[in-house]
Amino acid sequence: MSETPVKQQSTAAFYGQAVLSFAVAIVATAIGIFKLEADTWVRAFLGIAVLYLVTSAFTLAKVIRDRQEAGQIVSRVDQARLDKLLADHDPFTERAL
Image (cartoon, rainbow, N blue to C red; front, top):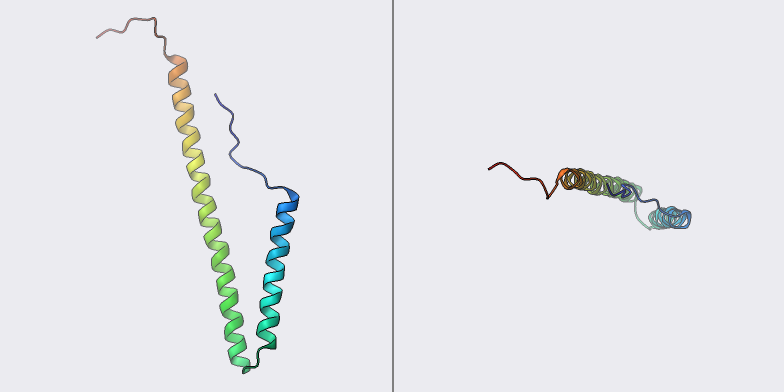
């Protein structure tokens, strides 16, 4: 049976870059909303909209990741079935018709 990894690990540098990029984007957006010359309710609305967008993005990323992982598991099960069929098959035996 082939041993293919189900989960690929990211490097520490990639993880750090992703976290830093997310932090910079959130801080820059918060500063932009805070410095905006508008009423408080407009800034609060924009702040809530940004939070909604961030949580929606996290949810979408999780759903995509879960679907991709489920596809890998199904693929591994199919590969295991094929490997078992090939291992059990003996081309030199006669089959009764």
